[in-house]
Amino acid sequence: MPGFDVLTRGDVLHAALKARDYLVSCGVPGSLAAKDPRLWGRRAVDHSRLGWLDLPSASRGLLAQVDGLVADARASGLDHVVLIAVGAEALAAQAIVAARPPGAGGELTVLDGGDTAGLGFTLERLDRTLVVLASKSGVSLEGDAYRRILTAAFRERGLSEKEIAARFLVVTDHGSPLHGFARQCGYRIGLTDPYLPGHFGALSAYGLVPAVLAGADAGTLLDEAAEVVPSLSRTEDNPGLLLGAILGGCAQQGPEGLARDKLLLRERGGPGPLTAWIAQLLAVGTGKRGRGVVTFEPPGVPRAYPDLHAVAINPAGAAGEDDDTSVWGPVGAQFLVWEYATAIAGWLLGVNPFEAGGASAQDAEDQAATMLQATAGGRPVVGRPVAVDGDIEIHTDLAWRGGSDLESVLTALLDRVPGTGYLAVASYLSGEFSGRYLAPSLARGARRPVAYGPGPGYLHATGAVHKDGPGTGAFLVVTGDPPAGDPLGDLAVPGRPYGLATLQFTRGVAEARALRQRGLPVVHLHLRDPVGGAGRLAAAARAAAVALS
Image (cartoon, rainbow, N blue to C red; front, side, top):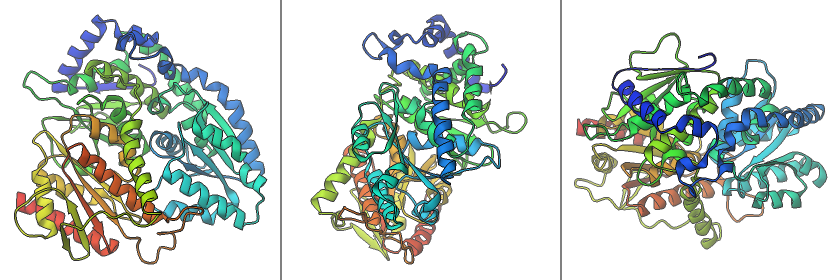
């Protein structure tokens, strides 16, 4: 099929063909292409929730407006776009920009509450910076902090309030709380359909506007998506149907009683924004009612597991020997086909794929906001650590045998990972530390796959499947004091009684609490010395793996 191809084999092929035949017999491909909400029950899904199927054509109306914004920005010397967003609203734009040809012009920096490097990069280029604030609802805690910091920085540069307002563009839903706030501030506003699910909005203004401002070609992107549209109503040569049958067919319990509900995503050149976007789409689209597909990257999967299957995205040449499935297609087609496949997988799993994952993401943010308010912006009290190993505080309600050292508690956590489960590492630290450095050792010790990502973005994007999905995850949450020598590590947030480090720490604590409240095993480590502590943690992970091998 021109424009997109899916190849699969082995046991995955058998499960996919069986699921595809069932889907065809139930008339699902035609009904989905016709945007028939009755697929999920008469009252479960509104027709307007399926509007993402029309975006390859409907979003063309945006192009003239965005072209005008680009012309205005370039005429004003603004070629550095800062996107303040968390989760789906940030990942689609990053994937689009990453796929553009070299030399396209313009830069995109995403501020999502993680590393302070992006903020430092932005403050050095403030005279060239246009800020896009994107959210389907209100402003996140991080969004509020960054908006205040950048507003104050513009003011210090001598910009008037009117000039500062002209540096901001808000992308939000019509009638959302952010819509009203943006009008009060005098910001330019781009409005979207409030019924469009955020995780299905890659080809909407959320993905397109910041990417085009940063130099991406939206016309080509929409052409790529439009090319696959005719195939999505067919029962044969339908890449979305086959991919959805693979995802949903594998995630269903097989005859041997094992569901292959874990997915290794392998992207050429290493994990990138497209991989992260697919992960959040599947997490929010399928992570409900005790079901869902959990995604992993290669560092966390050192060997094969019977409940995991691998998908290679745009592999070079033929499908690799280690991959069950390979998909080829440009990024515009990838967006639409993966969205269609997620809808198909949700139907097979008996869940509504268009329900927002906001409740799972919002509970931790609400807890963080409450803690910040209760402590008047000071560092929230998390209770005495159950143990301290050097400069690393250990907070957990797990019981374990052995000493109070870090290796012992990591060994206990790895031992709590179910035989069909996984471990997830969420790191709330600035700097070079990443859970990917721990993943190979932790996976060997647990004999199970390990997922990882920086907070708050990772659990904001994928929290639905961790909290409302199969419930087989164990979690390592890592926070730390700001690193010495980082002037932005605890930068004060104007108009708020806290700085960035306190906000980041509070977010990590709130996520750990939200996971524990769901009865999931959690260990929270706080690194008083983030540089030395990161090295100590990596060594402890290796030692725990050896102890369990």
